[in-house]
Image 1 (tube, rainbow, N blue to C red):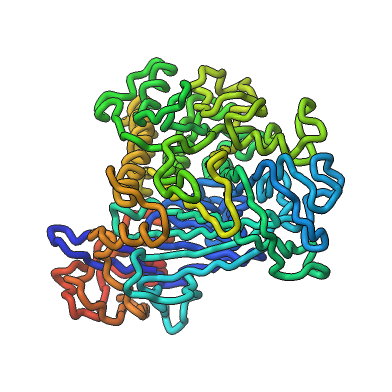
Image 2: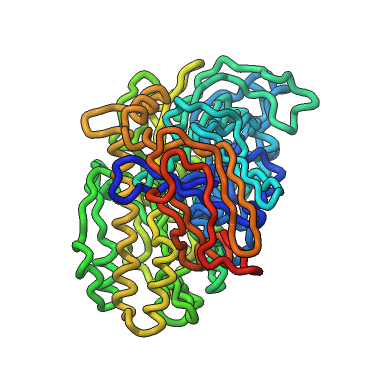
Length: 614
């Protein structure tokens, strides 16, 4: 693994090589077709079906942690899973019934006759009924490409397991990692998602997600029809009123949830929030401000804005995010999940998703300022499924789900708000005795609607950014030590914790300014990649060395690597215990020792027999 940081006073990059004198990584095994983005601070998993991370391995921050490597105690994921809904309204069921299958043939709102009208139809790869995949979805492909392939690392003569598989190296690529995945549906919409990740320290906390939804008409064959259907069969139908929803539960299975016994949808303390539109008609954009410090401070009777620059304005973001609240099952105020022995905040990070661009229609690539259509959140028990709509929607499960995604459109399940803020902002009781809806909810973040009528061959695009704002790991350790020792008060701890809202919004603002600066319009993959190529910072990282070798002896560590052209020099850092950084990283060589042509170093700085070095 290679990560990068700026070289002190130099304007060019210096490479920092992280290695282990033991097995560095154990690649996770999985039955899904998955690929892992492991560059920079944010690691994530992406699949060929658009649903990832079940059980808590999505949006891992800081990069370097992976639960399959080191067990649940080291789980640094921010998301329990990523799922989605894809809906249409007033659509005609394909006439060739042998090649089309609905989820649950007994559903009242799916017409029995082939070619019949469907008032509502929703393709679901979501938390409530994941088994829908066999009836509705067609797996596609997922590939990851690197600007520079990861180094082959050898430790004491043994080649380390490959941590990051590569489907190709392209030195001209506009991102350090580019992942392309696609999948189909029996609706005839093919979804292609392109993900971009970076190692530059100003851009390594976010991933760019580009979505393309195209009416290819390909509706066969979901797995349930493989034996009888005609593979690749297509229809020639318009798919009107297309809606797409993310379903993302933030932080409910993370390390902090495990520690406080407050994980999961039914017993968590994750708060979900949305900023970017007002809740007033006609729903204009509003400036996003970092108001959590002020609101929570008033709730607790503390001033949490002093020394933090107060409440900051971050402009025209449209962002959904999550943060750790006050667990209803934990004594005291535990925003951030501080450990009662070490003080380290187990949940010292704020993950989120920001909408940067959404096509107005298939024929108008300009950004639709009235997107997203909706952002609300629901507890697991309140998220309706096809077969279990609430009483007022009995026999109309598809309609229930579609209206959950879209507003306006009639009754909305559980609440009629288009944009719902968290329990604290809504003035809802929170903590012990709170309404279950506000305990460990999952978010619903929807785009599309009336303007997205896709005729055969038509397509629409949207661009989002997933990001995490958090404390560097060693800083979180040191803060915890100060809190336990009493040199940091609870008010100071909370003040520091709520500055992470600013950190997250700053990352969103920076990424949005890269993708679609004011006065520009970025829609297609080609337009997006042109913007990325024009950003000097994103193109400034050096290549990885093709190989890195570490050999141990009695009182020193012999390190060697292949030369990397275009660098000013190298730095080498070392730690003990494990590679997670629970112990401080110590610089054992700098660019003054290792110039541009250096390819080896003998580390004899207090090396001891029997100690594991990383």
